Image (cartoon, rainbow over all chains, first blue to last red; front, side, top):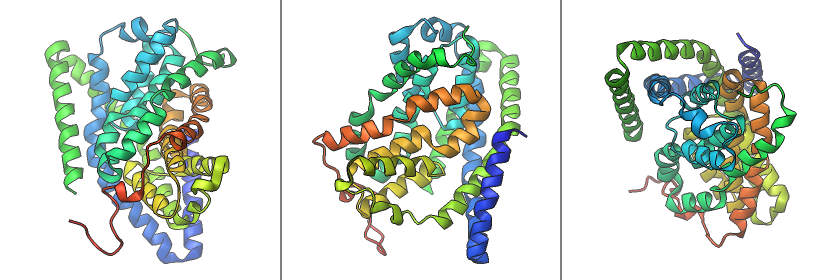
Length: 170
Length: 184
């Protein structure tokens, strides 16, 4: 059990205790809500989880180091931002893929751009959730306001990278 | 309900197609290798997911989203964007929870800049996602670098959205229905 898991459980139980202090009904509603959310999330997740590993098997060896390596600079940052926007699924797909890319020799700044592109441009989430709830006009406003930001994140990461000696460069 | 099943079917079809492609191009050993990696991943993240869902549900009981909205109106200036960014970061849960909250905030008076800042802060720097996924999988150094680079972006996007001549009102959202009525 890592520190992150422990932290989230401590905070979750503290929040649940606050609910219980308000009223046992509120606490029970929180637990029931969490259970029904798990029931809704789990089937999709269990089907989506193998996708990251399978895609990782399909991505040609050397792709990450050839195109998104530490020396790929601005071009790599732009490519990574776009690739991030096309990355399917939730965090359980994206982060393991990024770990795979880093191990295969992709540059950290390019991976910052990739994660930012995934979070900001993510086609899958935009089409599956944002469009039905908020409508096309909101998506246009949001994308026009933010399409360049993943590149900005990648470039700032490039500048800040010397301050993070703990991140291995291959 | 329909959308949920559609999502499940699309994801399942994509995963099966990927499995078939791996089997076709790389052989059965590669499929088995991928499934083994998946199993390890499930064991790693399941405790975080259970804790994260509980945290999300408990916070939703404690924090009424409408209470934040009066801080995020069109006249709220930079402070409104900062508040929206902070709210987006502590917003737990996936897109199922976050986008409906955008509607609630909009109805309660948040302007488009604040809404964009909220959505971006949630999707880019959501605290729960960082703790549950990014930190355990990619490690603290990379997660910190990524967070520092992402921190100013929601405010920037909010400023751009306020400056852009694209107007958006809650009435433009398909998900917005008068309370108590179910739309066609």
